[in-house]
Length: 181
Image (cartoon, rainbow, N blue to C red; front, side, top):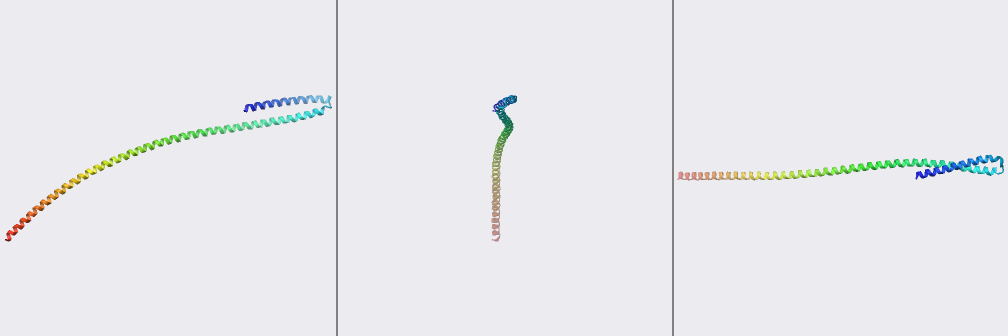
């Protein structure tokens, strides 16, 4: 589009240059004809004035077009800079998002590993607790059996001792009876 505008501007400038050249040639022709043709001089002067005005308008238009072209170029540069910045921002966001996804995946993996490790530790603790419980029960059963054996042994000794003392008391009682009789 810019090339078309530039070509159009160039064509207009060439056209204007041709018009300027024509106007200048008309001015030259009219100034040499002024001396010979006094009557047509006023109409020619009006034509010259008109052409001069058109030349000024064309010059002003060419200047305005040049200003517009300069502004358009400046605007295009600004738009291009903003586009480049937007592309860079987009790349940065894409990179940041990729890093975020990678970090999130790494964190998920770490959490999974930590959970598996915690589950393994929990299972080991349960197994250890079960092993200790069974061991304690065995110790307790052994202690209970030992205590029952000792209790039975002590009871038997006491019964034997009581039996012996009863027999001794009975013997003493009989001996005392015999002595008293």
